[in-house]
Amino acid sequence: MRVSSTLSRRPRLLAALCALALAGIAQHTPHSIAEDAGNLYNTAVDIRMGERYFERQCSRCHGFDATGNDEAGGPNLTGRLRNASTDVGIFNVIRNGVQGTAMLPVAPDVPDATVWQLVAYIDSLRYDPSSVVLDGDAGRGADLFTGKGDCASCHMVNGSGGRMGPDLSRIGEDNTPEDLLLSMTNPHEEVAPRWWTLRVTGPDGELREGFRMGEDSFALRIMDEEENLWSFRKSQIQNYQRVEESTMPSYEGELNDSELDDLVAYLFSLRREVLPQ
Ligand code: HEC
Ligand code: HEC
Image (tube, rainbow, N blue to C red; front, side, top):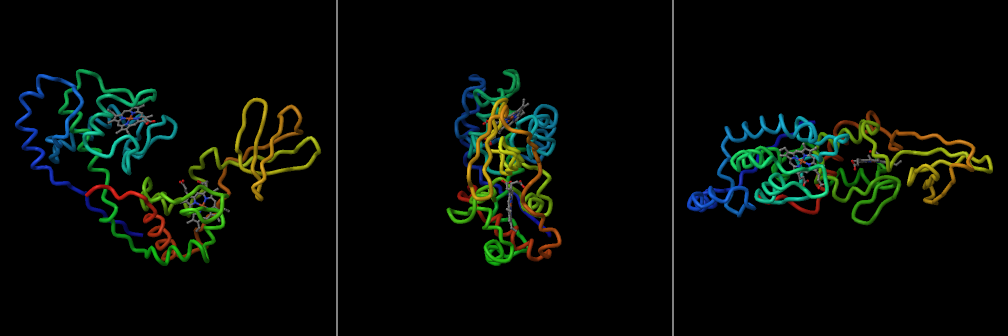
Protein backbone atom coordinates (compact mmCIF):
# COMPACT_ATOMS: atom_id res chain seq x y z
CA MET A 1 0.00 0.00 0.00
CA ARG A 2 1.32 3.44 -0.83
CA VAL A 3 0.46 6.48 1.18
CA SER A 4 1.41 9.96 0.26
CA SER A 5 0.55 13.10 2.10
CA THR A 6 1.43 16.72 1.82
CA LEU A 7 1.68 18.96 4.82
CA SER A 8 -1.08 21.44 5.22
CA ARG A 9 0.19 24.94 5.52
CA ARG A 10 -2.31 27.48 6.59
CA PRO A 11 -1.73 30.99 5.36
CA ARG A 12 -0.26 32.82 8.27
CA LEU A 13 1.18 35.93 6.70
CA LEU A 14 -1.51 38.34 7.87
CA ALA A 15 -1.45 36.97 11.38
CA ALA A 16 2.32 37.12 11.32
CA LEU A 17 2.28 40.79 10.35
CA CYS A 18 -0.08 41.61 13.21
CA ALA A 19 2.17 39.69 15.55
CA LEU A 20 5.15 41.65 14.32
CA ALA A 21 3.44 44.88 15.31
CA LEU A 22 2.80 43.48 18.77
CA ALA A 23 6.18 41.85 19.18
CA GLY A 24 7.69 44.78 21.08
CA ILE A 25 4.98 44.62 23.72
CA ALA A 26 4.96 40.84 23.87
CA GLN A 27 8.65 40.73 24.75
CA HIS A 28 7.98 42.49 28.01
CA THR A 29 5.18 40.21 29.10
CA PRO A 30 7.00 36.91 29.12
CA HIS A 31 5.02 33.67 29.08
CA SER A 32 1.60 35.25 29.06
CA ILE A 33 -1.11 33.14 27.42
CA ALA A 34 -0.51 33.42 23.69
CA GLU A 35 -2.86 35.62 21.71
CA ASP A 36 -3.92 34.45 18.30
CA ALA A 37 -1.13 36.10 16.38
CA GLY A 38 -0.05 33.08 14.36
CA ASN A 39 3.27 31.32 14.49
CA LEU A 40 6.23 33.48 13.50
CA TYR A 41 8.61 30.60 13.99
CA ASN A 42 7.49 28.40 11.19
CA THR A 43 10.34 28.07 8.72
CA ALA A 44 12.00 24.78 7.85
CA VAL A 45 14.82 25.70 10.24
CA ASP A 46 12.34 26.37 13.06
CA ILE A 47 10.70 23.01 12.45
CA ARG A 48 14.08 21.30 12.65
CA MET A 49 14.96 23.17 15.86
CA GLY A 50 11.58 22.19 17.29
CA GLU A 51 12.21 18.59 16.37
CA ARG A 52 15.61 18.59 18.09
CA TYR A 53 14.16 20.08 21.25
CA PHE A 54 11.32 17.59 21.10
CA GLU A 55 13.67 14.64 20.86
CA ARG A 56 15.57 15.82 23.93
CA GLN A 57 12.71 16.91 26.17
CA CYS A 58 9.48 15.35 25.00
CA SER A 59 10.19 12.08 23.26
CA ARG A 60 10.59 10.04 26.41
CA CYS A 61 6.85 10.45 26.98
CA HIS A 62 5.53 11.06 23.47
CA GLY A 63 7.80 8.72 21.56
CA PHE A 64 10.71 9.58 19.30
CA ASP A 65 8.46 10.20 16.31
CA ALA A 66 5.70 11.78 18.46
CA THR A 67 3.32 8.90 17.83
CA GLY A 68 2.90 8.31 21.54
CA ASN A 69 4.31 6.03 24.21
CA ASP A 70 1.79 3.81 25.98
CA GLU A 71 4.02 3.12 28.96
CA ALA A 72 4.91 6.73 29.68
CA GLY A 73 1.34 7.81 28.89
CA GLY A 74 2.21 10.54 26.39
CA PRO A 75 -0.43 10.57 23.64
CA ASN A 76 0.15 10.50 19.90
CA LEU A 77 0.63 14.08 18.67
CA THR A 78 0.40 13.38 14.94
CA GLY A 79 -3.39 13.27 14.69
CA ARG A 80 -6.20 15.36 16.10
CA LEU A 81 -5.22 16.71 19.52
CA ARG A 82 -7.62 16.43 22.42
CA ASN A 83 -6.58 19.56 24.28
CA ALA A 84 -5.96 21.91 21.41
CA SER A 85 -7.26 22.56 17.93
CA THR A 86 -5.24 25.67 17.04
CA ASP A 87 -1.58 26.68 17.13
CA VAL A 88 -2.29 28.96 20.06
CA GLY A 89 -3.97 26.10 21.86
CA ILE A 90 -0.91 23.88 21.34
CA PHE A 91 1.34 26.72 22.49
CA ASN A 92 -0.67 27.07 25.69
CA VAL A 93 -0.62 23.32 26.38
CA ILE A 94 3.19 23.30 26.12
CA ARG A 95 3.62 26.55 28.06
CA ASN A 96 1.13 25.73 30.82
CA GLY A 97 0.92 21.94 30.79
CA VAL A 98 -2.30 20.01 31.31
CA GLN A 99 -3.29 20.27 34.93
CA GLY A 100 -3.52 17.07 36.88
CA THR A 101 -1.56 15.04 34.31
CA ALA A 102 2.07 14.15 33.65
CA MET A 103 2.09 16.90 31.03
CA LEU A 104 3.99 19.58 32.94
CA PRO A 105 4.66 23.11 31.71
CA VAL A 106 8.04 23.67 30.04
CA ALA A 107 10.55 25.32 32.34
CA PRO A 108 9.84 29.05 32.78
CA ASP A 109 13.22 29.99 31.28
CA VAL A 110 12.42 28.33 27.97
CA PRO A 111 11.80 31.24 25.58
CA ASP A 112 8.48 31.61 23.78
CA ALA A 113 10.36 31.26 20.49
CA THR A 114 11.34 27.71 21.42
CA VAL A 115 7.76 26.88 22.31
CA TRP A 116 6.64 28.21 18.91
CA GLN A 117 9.26 26.05 17.24
CA LEU A 118 7.77 23.06 19.04
CA VAL A 119 4.35 24.12 17.77
CA ALA A 120 5.76 24.33 14.24
CA TYR A 121 7.25 20.87 14.58
CA ILE A 122 4.00 19.36 15.90
CA ASP A 123 2.10 21.13 13.10
CA SER A 124 4.43 19.61 10.55
CA LEU A 125 3.40 16.14 11.75
CA ARG A 126 -0.31 16.67 11.43
CA TYR A 127 -1.57 16.26 7.97
CA ASP A 128 -4.70 17.32 6.27
CA PRO A 129 -6.60 14.06 5.80
CA SER A 130 -8.15 15.29 2.56
CA SER A 131 -4.67 15.52 1.02
CA VAL A 132 -3.83 11.92 1.80
CA VAL A 133 -4.03 9.83 -1.34
CA LEU A 134 -4.84 6.18 -0.76
CA ASP A 135 -4.91 3.31 -3.22
CA GLY A 136 -8.10 1.84 -1.84
CA ASP A 137 -11.71 2.79 -2.41
CA ALA A 138 -13.69 3.74 0.72
CA GLY A 139 -17.01 2.70 -0.82
CA ARG A 140 -15.80 -0.81 -1.56
CA GLY A 141 -14.23 -0.86 1.90
CA ALA A 142 -17.61 -0.08 3.48
CA ASP A 143 -19.12 -3.05 1.62
CA LEU A 144 -16.34 -5.34 2.82
CA PHE A 145 -16.82 -4.07 6.37
CA THR A 146 -20.41 -5.22 6.55
CA GLY A 147 -20.08 -8.04 4.00
CA LYS A 148 -17.21 -10.38 3.28
CA GLY A 149 -14.90 -9.05 6.03
CA ASP A 150 -17.63 -9.45 8.64
CA CYS A 151 -16.15 -6.59 10.66
CA ALA A 152 -19.56 -5.21 11.63
CA SER A 153 -20.37 -8.33 13.61
CA CYS A 154 -17.86 -7.10 16.20
CA HIS A 155 -17.50 -3.38 15.52
CA MET A 156 -19.99 -0.56 15.80
CA VAL A 157 -19.85 2.32 13.32
CA ASN A 158 -22.25 5.21 13.83
CA GLY A 159 -24.62 3.19 15.95
CA SER A 160 -24.83 -0.06 14.02
CA GLY A 161 -22.77 -3.19 14.47
CA GLY A 162 -21.59 -5.45 17.28
CA ARG A 163 -20.01 -4.85 20.67
CA MET A 164 -17.29 -7.49 20.56
CA GLY A 165 -14.73 -4.86 19.57
CA PRO A 166 -14.19 -1.11 19.94
CA ASP A 167 -16.51 1.41 18.31
CA LEU A 168 -14.78 2.54 15.12
CA SER A 169 -16.94 5.59 14.31
CA ARG A 170 -13.94 7.93 14.67
CA ILE A 171 -11.07 5.52 14.14
CA GLY A 172 -9.67 7.57 11.23
CA GLU A 173 -8.96 10.57 13.44
CA ASP A 174 -6.18 9.16 15.58
CA ASN A 175 -4.69 6.60 13.25
CA THR A 176 -2.53 6.78 10.18
CA PRO A 177 -3.39 4.51 7.26
CA GLU A 178 -0.37 2.39 8.25
CA ASP A 179 -1.78 1.95 11.78
CA LEU A 180 -5.12 0.90 10.35
CA LEU A 181 -3.55 -1.68 8.09
CA LEU A 182 -1.55 -3.09 11.02
CA SER A 183 -4.69 -3.35 13.17
CA MET A 184 -6.07 -5.77 10.59
CA THR A 185 -2.95 -7.75 9.76
CA ASN A 186 -1.41 -7.84 13.22
CA PRO A 187 -4.18 -7.41 15.82
CA HIS A 188 -2.14 -8.85 18.69
CA GLU A 189 0.44 -6.09 18.48
CA GLU A 190 -1.21 -3.62 20.85
CA VAL A 191 -4.24 -4.76 22.78
CA ALA A 192 -5.76 -2.43 25.34
CA PRO A 193 -6.53 -4.18 28.69
CA ARG A 194 -10.23 -3.57 28.09
CA TRP A 195 -10.03 -6.19 25.30
CA TRP A 196 -8.08 -8.85 27.13
CA THR A 197 -9.86 -12.11 27.81
CA LEU A 198 -10.36 -13.81 31.17
CA ARG A 199 -11.05 -17.53 31.47
CA VAL A 200 -12.63 -18.18 34.82
CA THR A 201 -13.45 -21.53 36.38
CA GLY A 202 -16.23 -20.60 38.77
CA PRO A 203 -17.30 -22.13 42.12
CA ASP A 204 -19.51 -24.56 40.18
CA GLY A 205 -16.49 -25.82 38.21
CA GLU A 206 -17.80 -24.33 34.99
CA LEU A 207 -15.39 -22.48 32.69
CA ARG A 208 -16.57 -19.08 31.51
CA GLU A 209 -14.69 -16.84 29.15
CA GLY A 210 -15.18 -13.21 28.28
CA PHE A 211 -13.74 -9.73 27.97
CA ARG A 212 -12.06 -8.41 31.06
CA MET A 213 -14.53 -5.74 32.17
CA GLY A 214 -13.01 -5.40 35.63
CA GLU A 215 -10.33 -6.92 37.77
CA ASP A 216 -9.11 -5.96 41.24
CA SER A 217 -7.71 -7.78 44.27
CA PHE A 218 -11.06 -9.29 45.18
CA ALA A 219 -13.23 -9.58 42.12
CA LEU A 220 -13.39 -10.25 38.40
CA ARG A 221 -16.00 -9.12 35.91
CA ILE A 222 -16.34 -10.47 32.42
CA MET A 223 -18.67 -10.07 29.47
CA ASP A 224 -19.23 -13.27 27.50
CA GLU A 225 -20.02 -13.69 23.81
CA GLU A 226 -23.74 -13.23 24.38
CA GLU A 227 -22.96 -9.96 26.16
CA ASN A 228 -23.89 -11.41 29.57
CA LEU A 229 -21.99 -9.89 32.46
CA TRP A 230 -20.56 -12.22 35.09
CA SER A 231 -19.02 -11.23 38.43
CA PHE A 232 -16.84 -13.50 40.51
CA ARG A 233 -15.23 -13.16 43.91
CA LYS A 234 -11.64 -14.22 43.57
CA SER A 235 -11.90 -16.09 46.88
CA GLN A 236 -14.66 -18.30 45.50
CA ILE A 237 -13.43 -19.25 42.03
CA GLN A 238 -11.30 -22.30 41.36
CA ASN A 239 -8.86 -20.51 39.05
CA TYR A 240 -8.59 -18.01 36.26
CA GLN A 241 -6.38 -17.21 33.34
CA ARG A 242 -5.74 -13.89 31.63
CA VAL A 243 -5.15 -13.80 27.88
CA GLU A 244 -3.61 -10.56 26.72
CA GLU A 245 -4.20 -11.25 23.04
CA SER A 246 -6.79 -9.84 20.71
CA THR A 247 -9.94 -11.76 19.96
CA MET A 248 -9.87 -10.16 16.53
CA PRO A 249 -8.67 -12.56 13.83
CA SER A 250 -5.79 -11.47 11.60
CA TYR A 251 -6.89 -10.71 8.05
CA GLU A 252 -3.42 -11.25 6.62
CA GLY A 253 -3.99 -13.74 3.81
CA GLU A 254 -7.74 -13.80 4.51
CA LEU A 255 -8.29 -10.68 2.45
CA ASN A 256 -6.08 -9.76 -0.49
CA ASP A 257 -3.99 -6.58 -0.66
CA SER A 258 -6.52 -4.60 -2.64
CA GLU A 259 -9.33 -5.55 -0.24
CA LEU A 260 -7.16 -4.46 2.70
CA ASP A 261 -6.45 -1.18 0.89
CA ASP A 262 -10.19 -0.64 0.44
CA LEU A 263 -10.80 -1.26 4.14
CA VAL A 264 -7.98 1.13 5.08
CA ALA A 265 -9.57 3.82 2.89
CA TYR A 266 -12.94 3.23 4.55
CA LEU A 267 -11.56 3.23 8.10
CA PHE A 268 -9.50 6.35 7.40
CA SER A 269 -12.66 8.13 6.24
CA LEU A 270 -14.34 7.49 9.62
CA ARG A 271 -13.94 10.82 11.34
CA ARG A 272 -16.30 13.37 12.67
CA GLU A 273 -14.11 16.42 12.34
CA VAL A 274 -11.96 17.46 9.47
CA LEU A 275 -8.81 19.30 10.49
CA PRO A 276 -8.93 23.00 9.62
CA GLN A 277 -7.27 23.78 6.30
C1 HEC B 1 6.44 13.13 31.69
C2 HEC B 1 5.78 12.84 30.42
C3 HEC B 1 5.61 13.98 29.41
C4 HEC B 1 6.58 14.83 28.91
C5 HEC B 1 8.07 14.89 29.24
C6 HEC B 1 5.90 15.66 27.95
N1 HEC B 1 4.58 15.34 27.86
FE1 HEC B 1 3.20 16.19 26.64
N2 HEC B 1 1.73 15.07 27.49
C7 HEC B 1 1.93 14.08 28.42
C8 HEC B 1 0.64 13.52 28.80
C9 HEC B 1 0.39 12.40 29.80
C10 HEC B 1 -0.33 14.23 28.05
C11 HEC B 1 -1.85 14.01 28.07
C12 HEC B 1 -2.48 14.98 29.04
C13 HEC B 1 -3.98 14.72 29.11
O1 HEC B 1 -4.36 13.71 29.71
O2 HEC B 1 -4.73 15.50 28.54
C14 HEC B 1 0.40 15.18 27.23
C15 HEC B 1 -0.20 16.04 26.34
C16 HEC B 1 0.47 16.84 25.44
C17 HEC B 1 -0.14 17.63 24.41
C18 HEC B 1 -1.64 17.72 24.14
C19 HEC B 1 -2.05 16.48 23.36
C20 HEC B 1 -3.53 16.45 23.04
O3 HEC B 1 -3.97 15.47 22.41
O4 HEC B 1 -4.24 17.37 23.39
C21 HEC B 1 0.85 18.26 23.72
C22 HEC B 1 0.70 19.20 22.53
C23 HEC B 1 2.10 17.88 24.35
N3 HEC B 1 1.82 17.01 25.39
C24 HEC B 1 3.36 18.32 23.94
C25 HEC B 1 4.52 18.08 24.65
C26 HEC B 1 5.79 18.69 24.35
C27 HEC B 1 6.04 19.62 23.18
C28 HEC B 1 6.66 18.23 25.29
C29 HEC B 1 8.13 18.62 25.45
C30 HEC B 1 8.39 20.00 25.71
C31 HEC B 1 5.95 17.32 26.16
N4 HEC B 1 4.66 17.26 25.75
C32 HEC B 1 6.53 16.64 27.22
C33 HEC B 1 3.13 13.68 28.95
C34 HEC B 1 4.36 14.31 28.74
C1 HEC C 1 -14.37 -11.36 16.46
C2 HEC C 1 -14.53 -9.94 16.60
C3 HEC C 1 -13.81 -9.04 15.60
C4 HEC C 1 -13.88 -9.04 14.23
C5 HEC C 1 -14.62 -10.00 13.33
C6 HEC C 1 -13.09 -7.89 13.80
N1 HEC C 1 -12.57 -7.24 14.88
FE1 HEC C 1 -11.45 -5.58 14.81
N2 HEC C 1 -11.14 -5.68 16.82
C7 HEC C 1 -11.74 -6.60 17.66
C8 HEC C 1 -11.25 -6.40 19.02
C9 HEC C 1 -11.66 -7.20 20.26
C10 HEC C 1 -10.35 -5.31 18.96
C11 HEC C 1 -9.58 -4.68 20.15
C12 HEC C 1 -8.31 -5.44 20.41
C13 HEC C 1 -7.27 -5.13 19.40
O1 HEC C 1 -6.76 -4.00 19.38
O2 HEC C 1 -6.99 -6.02 18.57
C14 HEC C 1 -10.31 -4.89 17.56
C15 HEC C 1 -9.55 -3.83 17.07
C16 HEC C 1 -9.68 -3.30 15.80
C17 HEC C 1 -9.06 -2.07 15.36
C18 HEC C 1 -8.19 -1.15 16.24
C19 HEC C 1 -9.11 -0.30 17.06
C20 HEC C 1 -8.41 0.74 17.90
O3 HEC C 1 -9.12 1.39 18.70
O4 HEC C 1 -7.19 0.91 17.76
C21 HEC C 1 -9.42 -1.88 14.06
C22 HEC C 1 -9.03 -0.71 13.15
C23 HEC C 1 -10.23 -2.99 13.68
N3 HEC C 1 -10.38 -3.84 14.77
C24 HEC C 1 -10.78 -3.17 12.42
C25 HEC C 1 -11.44 -4.33 12.02
C26 HEC C 1 -11.82 -4.62 10.66
C27 HEC C 1 -11.63 -3.67 9.49
C28 HEC C 1 -12.39 -5.84 10.66
C29 HEC C 1 -12.91 -6.64 9.48
C30 HEC C 1 -11.98 -6.84 8.39
C31 HEC C 1 -12.40 -6.31 12.04
N4 HEC C 1 -11.81 -5.38 12.83
C32 HEC C 1 -12.93 -7.52 12.47
C33 HEC C 1 -12.65 -7.58 17.30
C34 HEC C 1 -12.98 -7.91 16.01
